[in-house]
Amino acid sequence: MRNQADFTKNVLPYLAQLEEDEAGPDAAEISRRYGISLERIVMLSRNENPYGASHRVRAALTDVPVHRYPDSRSFLTALTSYTGYPEECLVAGAGMDEIITTICRIFLGAGDKALIPVPTYNFYGLAVELCGAVPHYQPRLAGFAVDRKIPDGIKMAFLCSPNNPTGNALSEENVRAVVEGTESIVFLDEAYAEFAGKSLLKLVSEYDNLVVGRTLSKAFGLAGLRLGYAVAPPWIARQYRRVAPLFSISCLSLAAGVAALQDLGWMRECVGKIVAERERMRESLASAHPSEGNFLYIHTEEKAKVVVERLLCRGIVVRDCSSFPGSGENCLRVTVGRPEENERFLEDFKKAITTS
Image 1 (spheres, rainbow, N blue to C red):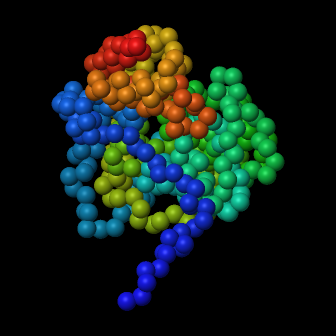
Image 2 (image 1 turned 180 degrees about the vertical axis):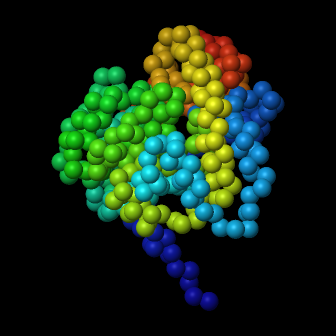
């Protein structure tokens, strides 16, 4: 038998620099670690819709032919009514993350540079690095606005509105200035647009270098089914369809997406309740930034990981934002949950920040 070879040398060199992404503890782990019953654990760390999906979604999942490969055309047809764009401008993916990684594969290669204003969603940097490209992190301006000047040599730029984790929505003027001032491809992530009550989807029809990504994970309550889409100029949508895996979205997810888009009333009802709770919570939190998402970005005097750990001991799970590039060590993010969950957070957060 030959000596065992060093097979790790086959790993692409640029992948050695990547850090494993972390979803944070789940309820079962917290229950084991702290001896807290599952019923007492409040998950406010992942920006999910606490009210879940429409009853039409659950009904639609009972009659899906799972022995057949999925076909996304019915979902894309449903999206035409919701977005106002024809199918030639629409593409779908297994969650926003697949949309992002596929767009990156189209435009980024080894050594290319992508602009990422920070703090923001940390997956952009990972997606860029998976292509062998280099993230160029740029600090945001006052109020978390984005510098309209794109440095030379940038091939892609990532914007997020409302921005995760800060919660602010970019102005149309700010986004137009960025898109018009560069020859790069601009990806605008609107995962939380429904909570802001506004969108810049209309700009796709005006600019050939703008792609807007959306998801059904947040306002529509389909986080566990991983379903996203993008609105893009036809030339980019064609490239996307050439590169994306043909059957990556499950037939269950697609059926759920169609059903969710047929019950916009439920989505809007959920959004209304979440927005009302968001504003109520912000009034009680002096260190929370204004938000147009389904979460709040809160500054802490102590390091956020210390406050987050104290909350974990009480069964409240929030997100320490130190893993977000540019966020620093003194901010956490809390998802807006149901009123009773939010009340528990407010009570326990007050105790967590006053513990010596």
